[in-house]
Image (tube, rainbow, N blue to C red; front, side, top):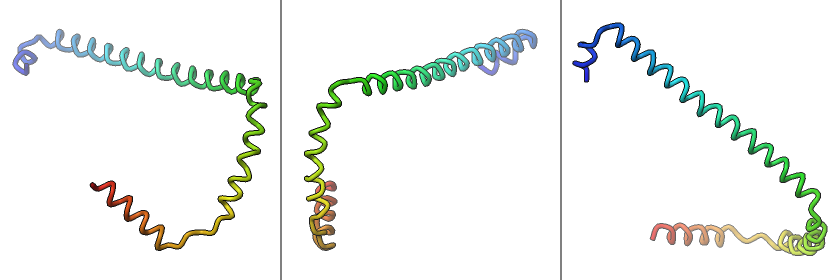
Length: 100
């Protein structure tokens, strides 16, 4: 390959390098432009989905379920904290199981 480059006339070598550089810049520019368009399209779809979610009637039906879940969370939060030895034993058991 190197022998072909050294035997090539200087003008032809410069022309091929220039063409390769132009092709690389065009390719990278195309990819960059596509990624920028993809980012803005994702942001637009996110806004559209958020607007649809605000106007969706199913959200009102899910509100009672959220209220029913609140007492369960309060019971869990008010449960006594476990001692460090049992937590350490659970971590050790999980670590041992993941290694086998």
